[in-house]
Image: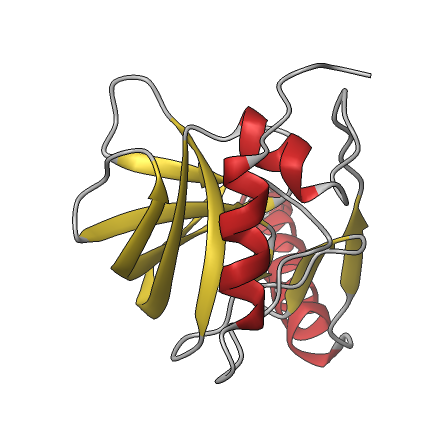
Length: 170
């Protein structure tokens, strides 16, 4: 074989082996969970403060995942479809899109420390902020987020929080 033809051929073989090795690594590597930290200028465990910060507080059932987007800081955002059954604060449509930081892309999952990821089929009380120029709402990331119980106790607690909302930052 001519030496002029041999060099590009060797380079091509090396490239194919490198790309194949990378794809094999991606298939064989274990799934990873990545913690995501967030902070607010108020206590997110205080429902009255969360209600004061939120533009809307609704009771809704997660009906599906609309999409998972790559966030600007590496962690994905999961966009959930939510059927609203009750509006405790604010005015929103009966079906909304809710953006929650975190989610799964490929084999990897990003979770916000101390905050439960929404689950399709479950009902929640959702404190939300508006996103300018969009029909999406952003979920306020609070550790108090939990599925609504059949007793409705969490709805009652949030109704009280909305009635006593605190807009001061401390």
